[in-house]
Image (cartoon, rainbow, N blue to C red):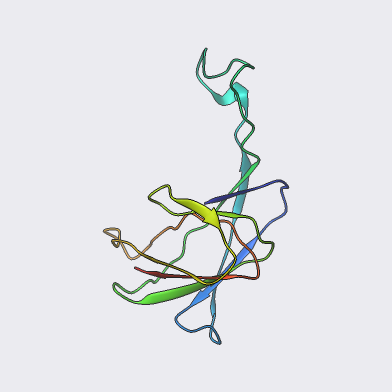
Length: 119
């Protein structure tokens, strides 16, 4: 999951090696508006921040313990599942627990930069 300023569809390529990013996921794009919040104070104009366009994608067939590299278009801001945020300027690495199924999600936004994580 990641956020951008526009609704353009994004693709995330991933794989075990930088020269073999053979897997790809296309993100689903949605908005989250103030009206979607339940009631005040969450939906009041004071304090509401527009998150932008929310992109969701699920990477499949991840092997436990295998390192994966991710490549996306358009450099933005990147947020790891543990809520640490920092700008992507070089290859990043993250080790995380595998979910109970063979599918895993990673929260990020980036572009033309590779992200490395271990499932």
